[in-house]
Image (cartoon, rainbow, N blue to C red):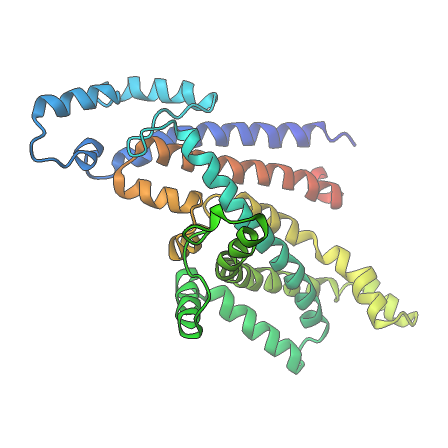
Length: 323
């Protein structure tokens, strides 16, 4: 059976979603109360004429439909204009922030995925035992725990212990040191945000892996493997584990798709200069171009991640694409 109809359906769906995102991206931030010009220039000496000139300079005096047409065309080519707050092109502001977010999110995801798959598999295999209750209890607690609260608790502990940085990427003056000293300083600043994000993600991966494997372990072919005398380790890791990974494909894609927005609370708590922290600042400053650029990249990343996840899922399980 040809896969072309399946590919076309997913492609059309992704394109329509992207167009809807562009429209929502334009409308959403203009519903925020407040005028970005008055927020940026709080001087009491600023006259109404000067405010009008600044509004015209940023194109905010145009009718909304003209602003939308300009925004739509620019979005298609990745041009989000000049930041109201930073006075620089939005891409100049966002790209370094994305790199900083990736530095934090990629290792956190990898650690959470590996740990979650292993402990989830052990928990499912030992269902009803003490180890299952312990793993499930810890996972549920971490999954339900607010990121900002966990980060705040780690900061309190770090301040109590002393010697552990709790904000930023580098200490003052660290960039002027040699490579080894600079790298060690960076790792010390990365520790707490990395631990926070890994623990938050770990709970979700463990729960999904456990529930998926519980379904797989009840299948007939698992019973047959046991009847043939296959060892427990072979049944778990050779037969059950690969099929239990199916639900994790979409979860992993979404997790990496949220690379820009998923770390916002962690970045805010630890003042990590990533895209989440930049977005948080832009919200308060009504910096429409940065907000639109950040929101666009967040949603596009999620859409594309799910788009490719659909193909991976369909490749692993042919029933998906044939349905």
